[in-house]
Figure 1 (cartoon, rainbow, N blue to C red):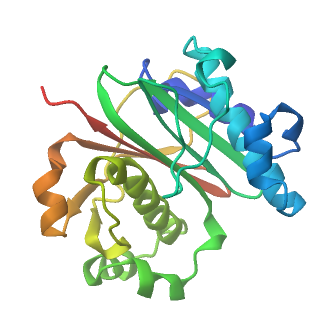
Figure 2 (cartoon, rainbow, N blue to C red):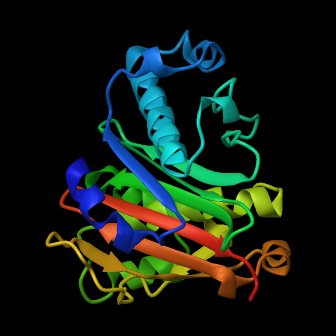
Length: 241
């Protein structure tokens, strides 16, 4: 399924955003000493997801024209969990136990920030909704018919929104401080490849006043892809026109 992503990635992301996805495996031999030190006491599964995520990120950076000399110490983790990207780069990493994915772009172009998240559809059960969903979101999911992937998509988008907006806002905000709307809004960009997952373009409402004062909702773009067993979300914050 990783190959499937690479067949339609140019539909999912714009030309100036670089994406890499790989099956989780042991890539610790490709970590810098500083990166390795960060996970040396972790269990093997954590080492694999971490190293594959970094491998994806470096592959995406290479596609953008950057190499090891641009991040000699590696892509280290900040205190808030964010990645320390090379200068003039913004990006995001996500993984499940079986997939890892990364997106990057040059700061100064069309984007000020990116957030990506991938989730297994069966990972998010109904009990999770009490902690992540607003009353309106729960009602929308439960009205009419319930989407097979709805709960996972809601969780994934909110994770991507946080990754994208947290560096700009500068403070923590919770799942219920944002509200996802129009979950099945059509994504109309033409698909070039022969393999086409379900694509959607939801929107977001910022419920936290201080966040809404800092961030322009109209500059947030959400992309959602529904795969057989996973959902993939990408949130970008664009420069003002």
